[in-house]
Length: 365
Image (cartoon, rainbow, N blue to C red; front, side):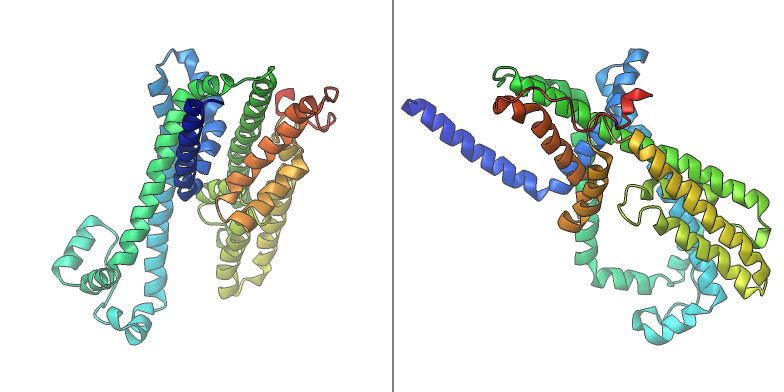
């Protein structure tokens, strides 16, 4: 290696280190971006049939994710606000807060959750304690919100340009091909990541629809006192919660069961607890167990073992935190595909046929 090549190599290593350090600072949103890219890429490719430009297709994909999520969050916030106001009024929590929280002492009642209600409360000085509290904790609140919106901005921008320029990145990587090993490996890992992560998206959608149908079906037969509230919202949240390992959907339907049981107990109608118990059994069997046994093997990818994939979802958050839910399965797929595709050729072994040929695959149906 001559001096010029050595200088260029050192410069390249320094640039790679700097870029790696910067990427590590934002590893969570970057990981979510990669997760979303592979989850939605088939949808993005399908939109080619409509002969739409790449930028329009990418915008449609992101809008299809962002708009329903925004509606869902807004709907949940409104319901939470309404129910919280009703709960505070019913149990006279304002008096309790006024006695124990100094900054809460000037509030006589919670204003109506409307623009007019907040405006009238502001004119009457009823929002002064909240404004003062926010001012005292302005640094913390500013950091919290700015960090959240920065991460969301990174996720949107990176996912958008991965959808548009993913092919260019792939072609750039293939320039360093060596005896077709790199090409074979990159094509295999790219295909498997798409299969696994797109399967996760399908799993969320399928469980959401199944949960909504189950909750609505239960409400159709159960007495009004034992019905579960907001079945559509709770069903959608159940599907999203299926991404969380171990506890998963239980963080939705177990509290929902308790919420349905409390009014029955308070009203002294203990005989109706049979309906609530029936709801819990149906949720465990139909919403939780059956999809876990049938959907996950079908949607686990082409070669990635479903057991290892579930283990990655379980251990990822334990080791890495929240973003481990997205990072661990990606690392698992990258590692297993390397061991299955590139490593045997590098060691001179005969070509293998995958990990488990009996496992059901996403492309088989």
